[in-house]
Structures are given as structure tokens and as C-alpha cells.
Image (cartoon, rainbow, N blue to C red; front, side):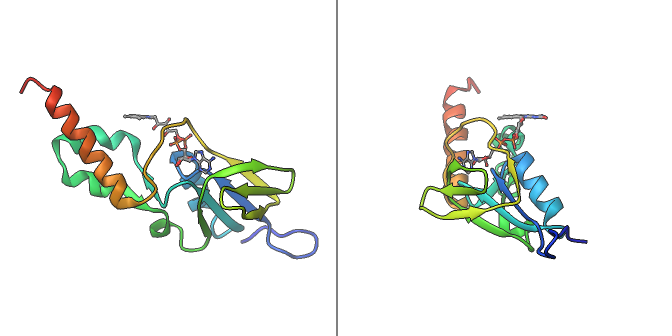
Length: 136
Ligand SMILES: Cc1cc2nc3c(=O)[nH]c(=O)nc-3n(C[C@H](O)[C@H](O)[C@H](O)COP(=O)(O)OP(=O)(O)OC[C@H]3O[C@@H](n4cnc5c(N)ncnc54)[C@H](O)[C@@H]3O)c2cc1C
């Protein structure tokens, strides 16, 4: 059941960051709150799948998942959060997103491509570089 405010409004939860922590929190809370996920990219990537993808390229496709594929009951904003106040999150394109509860799950900084095709191309490029370094 969704948590509501005193006025009966469903509580607004904003999650900033769609990595391991943010995606799991958003997926879990989507039917219990008015949920918004703000991530700088449109997809979730399993970080530790990269190594297996190097020896099994088809695995890469399964390790990059669009946020919309697991978030059927929440808003997704593909943008960078650039500022946070006590009431709102400001995104790079100037959108002000109000919240009752804020989850900051921005992890570590590692620039990643914004779209899924570019994310896959990025993985392929990393694999190519590693093959060039490999003695085999
Ligand atoms: C190769 C590799 C192997 C690993 N293996 C393991 C393992 O076996 N077991 C294990 O437990 N851990 C492993 N880890 C570590 C694990 O991946 C991290 O601990 C985990 O990803 C951290 O999750 P997170 O959600 O905090 O951050 P992240 O996964 O880094 O996610 C942060 C998200 O926030 C977004 N973001 C950042 N800044 C902003 C902003 N300003 N606005 C909007 N969005 C923003 C990013 O785009 C990203 O989606 C591994 C990591 C790597 C790289």
C-alpha cells in the first residue's frame, strides 16, 4: 500500500542515481510511493558483468537493462541532478522535481554513455582494447 501524507497525497520519493542501489530502491518502492528516478542515463548496467561479457559477448546485452523494463509504475527522468534543496532536485535541463523523501545513490563518478546502443558500443570498445593487450 502507498504511504500518504496527512492530506491523503501519496508521498513523493525521488531517487537520484540509477545504479545498483538506486535501481533496486526504485524498483522496490514503485508501488508504495509516487516515485521518480533521476539518472544521467536511460539504463541500468550490471557493473561486474563486464568481465564475463569479454569472453561471452552476447552476455553484454543482458547486462544492460533499460530503466523502463523494471520500472512500470514510476517516472524516469534521464538527466543529471545538478542541485538539491530541502524540497526539490534541479536537473541539468532546468527541471525542478519536488520530493517528500530523497534518496541519493550517485555512487562513484565514471562517465557512461547516455543511450543503451552507445553503452553497448562502449563495452565493445573496452573488450577490443583488452584483446589488443592480451598475449593470446
Ligand atoms: C568491474 C567491477 C566489478 C565489480 N564487482 C563487484 C562484485 O562482484 N560484488 C560487489 O558487491 N560489487 C562489485 N563491484 C562494485 C559495485 O559495482 C559497486 O559497489 C556498485 O555499483 C555501487 O552501486 P551504487 O548504486 O552506489 O553506484 P553506481 O552503480 O556507481 O551507480 C550510480 C548511478 O548514479 C548515476 N549518477 C551519478 N551522478 C548522477 C547525477 N548527478 N545525476 C543523476 N544520476 C547520477 C550514474 O549514472 C549511475 O547510474 C564491481 C564494480 C566494478 C566496476
